[in-house]
Structures are given as C-alpha cells and as structure tokens.
Figure 1 (cartoon, helix red, strand yellow):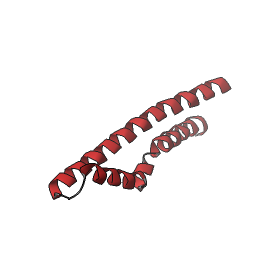
Figure 2 (cartoon, one colour; figure 1 turned 90 degrees about the horizontal axis):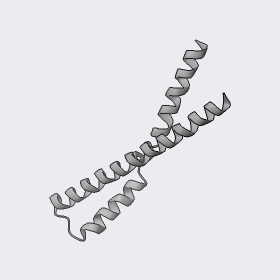
Figure 3 (spheres, one colour; figure 1 turned 180 degrees about the vertical axis):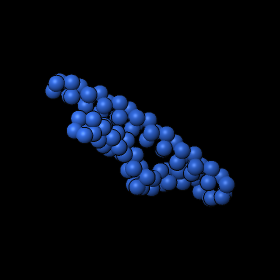
Figure 4 (cartoon, one colour; figure 1 turned 120 degrees about the vertical axis):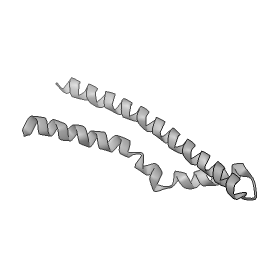
Length: 89
C-alpha cells in the first residue's frame, strides 16, 4: 500500500515536472516573440537583442511566471479531493 502511494507520488511528480518545463518553455517563447514583434512595430531604437533580453529579465520576476507553478498545485488538490470524496463520503 505504501509502495503504491510512493510510486504514484513519484510518477505524478515526474509527469508534472515535464509539463512544467514544457509550459515554461512555451510561455517564455511566446513572451520573446511578443517582445520582438513590439520592437519591430514600434521601431524602438537600440539593439533588438538587448531589448528582448531586458524584457525577458522583467518576465523572469513577474507573477505570470510564478503562476505556472500551479501545474504542481492544482492536480495535487484535485487528486486529494477525489481520494477524500471517494473514500469518506
């Protein structure tokens, strides 16, 4: 019983970690593309790479990036609630 729960937890962590990495990469690439398009549309002076680098540094400290950690929290809450409801209700 304990082995099964540990195996479920480990597999869940691995799967959620893969999802987290993929979502983070996708979100960062969307942000990069948006910054590059804004630089071209507004014809901002200076180096394009420096503008994108500064924008991504700002993104790294944003709340949006931290919200991606919900990939870990939401499924654990859902599975825990399902286990509780199925067994004790």
